[in-house]
Structure formats: C-alpha cells, structure tokens
Image (cartoon, rainbow, N blue to C red; front, top):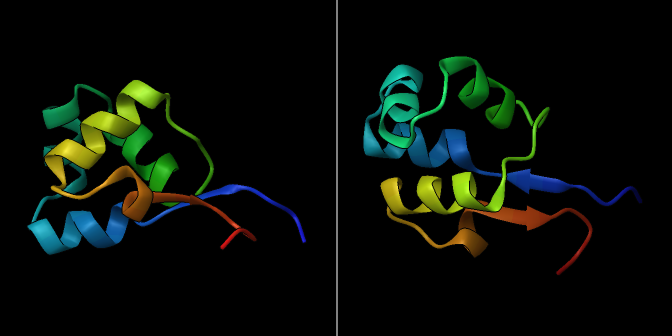
Length: 70
C-alpha cells in the first residue's frame, strides 16, 4: 500500500462554516492552496499545517495522518 499524507481539512473547514476563501485569508495562503490541500494534491509546510489546525480548532493528528499507518 502506498503511504502518503492524508487530511481532513475540508471536513473541519465545513464544520467551522468557513469558505475556502475565508480559510485561505485566515492562514495567509491562496484559495488555490486550500483547494490543492483538500484534494490531497499538496502537502503543506509544517507552519501552514499548524496554522490550519489552530484556525480549525483541532489537533494536527486529527487533521493530518499518514495513510496506511494506524
């Protein structure tokens, strides 16, 4: 099985009621970056990942994980 970083950014964003634009503005990235992260096409830097977890009020472990690991 291929191991890769997966995320639940879209789920947490929707739960918080943010649009992609609003989330991007809060963490100082573009909407295109949020789209790429949500579609699993881009793995954010640790700094961006921490900002996402903070704004989305969740832990890094709940927001990002490595597929295939338990």
